[in-house]
Image 1 (tube, rainbow over the protein chains, first blue to last red):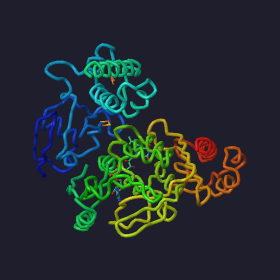
Image 2 (cartoon, chains in turn cyan, brown):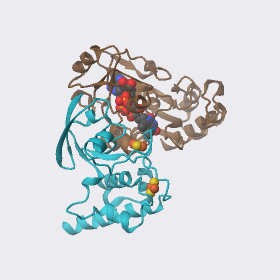
Image 3 (tube, chains in turn brown, orange):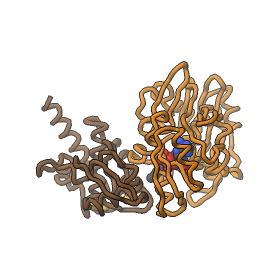
Image 4 (cartoon, rainbow over the protein chains, first blue to last red):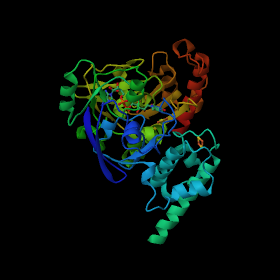
Amino acid sequence: MTKVTMTVNGRQVSGDVEDRTLLVHFIRDRLGLTGTHVGCDTSQCGACVVHMDGKSIKSCSTLAVQAAGSSVTTIEGLAQGGELHPVQAAFKANHGLQCGFCTPGMVMAAVDMINRYGGTLDEKTVRENLEGNICRCTGYHNIVKAILAAASDMSAGRQAAE
Amino acid sequence: MYETNYHRASSVADAVRLKGASEESKYVSGGMTLIPTMKQRLAAPTDLVDLRHVAEMKGITVSGGSVRIGAATTHAEVAQSSDIKAACPALAHLASLIGDPHVRHMGTIGGSIANNDPAADYPSAMLALGATIVTDRREIAADDFFTGLFETALADDEIVVAVTFRPPERAGYCKFPNPASRYAMTGVFVTRGADGVRVGVTGAGADGVFRHAAMEAALAGNFSPQALAGVTTDPSDLLSDIHGSAEYRANLVAVMARRAVAAA
Ligand SMILES: Cc1cc2nc3c(=O)[nH]c(=O)nc-3n(C[C@H](O)[C@H](O)[C@H](O)COP(=O)(O)OP(=O)(O)OC[C@H]3O[C@@H](n4cnc5c(N)ncnc54)[C@H](O)[C@@H]3O)c2cc1C
Ligand code: FES
Ligand code: FES
């Protein structure tokens, strides 16, 4: 057992874990943040995507002990003061989900790609950057639409703020 | 996953010491190969020594006409590096094609070459660039480093610290990704530089990554896709699996090589 301490959604948390505990299990079972999902056994589906130190990673393929000392953001950490994050709002407005199982990972992947590309995102880039996120319901079309809408909303917001 | 004990190394020397403290230990860098393998119980190291926080193994430097990439540098960092884009854009392109963005944020160049998966991208570039693999105890030419499927010249506790190479005049990489896994069904990296033309082929060889002597000879006089017309690859040296037969891969090698030269 090892005592791990990390920041999750801005709050410092710690817990004793077996060293083999996956980060996703620490987040779901120990912290009770069940928005992060497990969709596969092969590191391919992306339902488990969270941000570690500002970058998207697969929490099913990372140990909690590897994440010790880092800052983690999960889907629960996006909305601020009861307001949906612009990416969450765009998924809602564009019907970017059906069953919703892939959605937390999709949204975290989308926020990450908007962080990296900002307003220069185009459809091809979005589709390439969704390589690690599988959705078996939507056919991706509305997910791509939602991400493009959020990217342009967010860059318009940034310009307005400047 | 079987039980394991985690140790975070603070330096290369610390890592070697931690690893030596137990017989069934393993290094872990990005964990993008090792953790999935442990989840499937195909690997069961009693101890894991984490290299991701070792400062000496990080970063990209270009000096005296030589490029050095620390082994703990992630695929995303190589793909985005302005130094790599200037010195060898084909290598940045290769890194941008590995897996997906989340894998690229964790996976490292050192982990990839130490693992030497026969379908991994980086080994082809190391061969074609004539790179040098710098370990904690010696320097190994790429030609001597990759010794078979998942086999390298590394001793059990030897650490890849960095890779170095001289930027080629021209280089190109083209990969036919497996539609499901994105690993290379075949990937070809070509370079032309001071040492002539070098062609590294991954994803296709029955014994793993290899240099294509016939293509190197054909391109030496005429570095153009047309020069490769008629250069064949013997299928008996190639992989055959559910994803594609050896004959199919032989054709992929030809097509990927032509496209890589056209892109260079
Ligand atoms: C969904 C998915 C898709 C992928 N697609 C691709 C792809 O398209 N192309 C591709 O090339 N790869 C692909 N990969 C593999 C990925 O690139 C890995 O990151 C890489 O192969 C291993 O790097 P790592 O840092 O994660 O190593 P780890 O998993 O941490 O380690 C791998 C092995 O190398 C050893 N090791 C690690 N670092 C060192 C070191 N510095 N010195 C000595 N030994 C070391 C470890 O002990 C272990 O045996 C994919 C992985 C996943 C999960
Ligand atoms: S649960 Fe499928 S990639 Fe993590
Ligand atoms: S909405 Fe059902 S898996 Fe994506």
